[in-house]
Length: 418
Image (cartoon, rainbow, N blue to C red; front, side):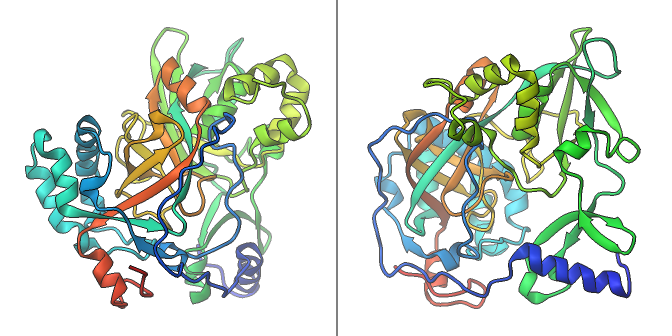
């Protein structure tokens, strides 16, 4: 949307304020540093409940890139390689045409690996990754991984007794603003808001929405039986509604109100509301159910609110492709090219494997921050709800990428360390 005059000036002023325009770039590290793996086991947290990373490098190249261990020496298991190869094939149509916000790759870099992927048999999956990729470490390589899953909750297409929490579609007055259109210094920055008179203002927060602020501007696509369950479904980004007649309605992420995400688990832990052993998602849900009024107020402290749409297929990631449990992961695309493989070596064995970056998340910010996807069902919920793993990450890039970046190619950004 374009608006002349004072609106444009106010928009740029707002953009500068929200984006915190800083010209400071964190330089690359000064030499290779092997990935570290902490020995302490992390306390389980609910999915995506950790604070987003503080302001830092603009992308992977600015964070610093060093050559990692040769892929032939990495502990990639055959079955994991087979599943990762299948997911990589799915991502290839996007990889060969999509602009990479990390500054690491160009679409042409992926062409050879993607062509080979379609002709590679499962028995050769592990060799495929060692033949067409090289491993790099972004920044210090220290990784933190949480988990998410596709929840199934009770819902109804129409409002009825026992189904009284609205599930909203995208409001008609929600505006997405690409700040890069107004200033080169703001490239890659976006905000969401609404027009109030001649000004762009922040969109309604969770409390305002739950109190009826969008009743006239947003469609209600379904009704949930439990406000706590739909709150956590918003965190996951997609899920399934079990309808009263036993049918299934799939819903997926359509947009978000532009407000910052706040993890309520950290708030509750700081305030002493959770006893030892209650810090998993399951423990938090139990507390919220036992304290409905206090729970509603705490959930409203997370001002972020997600809008949904009905979808016919299984859960899809940011690339628009179906995500796969135990293989797909959400990342910050400023540090990992969407579609690229990532090898995690963590203090949890189930998270230590080859993943394919096929999704993003509002709380997934910074280098080596990964949100692992575990599929649907009770087991997926249990794993994702308690996932808080620490260790190291290696990003797999097409062979030749490191040499080009080290030479300081204009397409690759600043030179990297070898």
